Image 1: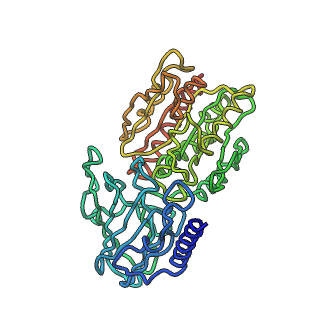
Image 2: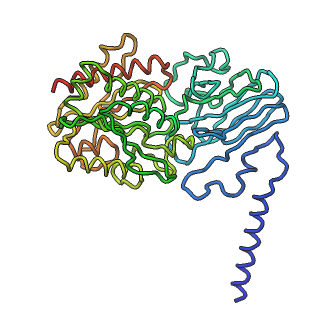
Image 3: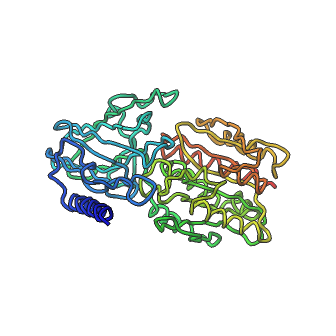
Length: 432
């Protein structure tokens, strides 16, 4: 009984002290970590990832930074002198695939030149994404090259070890908000606006096929024809940080739904089932690679432990069980440091042997400058499923094309790549 009372007393005192600390923060010293003070003793909250504290980081020199918006990633901010702000960017979990996404807003009380130093505390993480800036969070452009102070815009890095561990940039700040991000920010709201614009066409159907851990919708956008018996599957945004791949997917779909003879002929023969935002929780929380359970969804297609993948697989399997749904091709849109088309290894088990190689090879015909690297994507031969391409190949004999868009591509080049891929896909499949 005495021991029980002792343990109860200790627990009571501990909980009381934590609650008091949570409700009354000490005066914040703007020369030291702000987020560390505000997050307190609950770094993981109630999920399997580290939630970043959301709010404003205010400094005595009149500069304010904010991560209080969807898609933000700013774990801490420290003023090291009157004009330099050090920002701390950490992933949602470790170990993790290193896609060091960052996104925040900055403004100042007066017009001034402000220096921002990016730091990444985790071992082996370097600065990867060339900064993009925006005045409204909608239209984005590259930071001027002379404002990136510790490497040139045209530097070519052989691997991540060649990239700077820290990055220093200069921006002009004033009372108006300046957005700074690794790439264009695309949130669930942005995806829904785009879906609404596509769905006005009579042959486009939109379904919410499930919800995520945080109750965000999992969308399926169908481009369907009642007479078509062949089908392709398109995935985008399995990695939340890969917004450039998502943007290429938008252009691809624009061409597929266009009122052209090539597109109409394609739609007479093929249905398209698009899952445009596979990881909405990760995207809206500014994650590098994982969902809210701390899982890389690209690797969950075998074990299927996550709501997102389970929901999509269930929907696809239900389509396959109904009459008139024969699957031919899966396209997975992503982005990375180089433009690559990964094609499925062709063998006798493929429904359309060599289809993706033919598509990838002809993409080059439509691009004057961009010449993508084509690499084989070896799928499992043991029957073990890990990635989406394994699942589609083993279960349905489908070919897969993993489309990697160079993350530093300009808006115009992203569109060119999306158009080139759509033309090649429609020509090859439309001729079947």
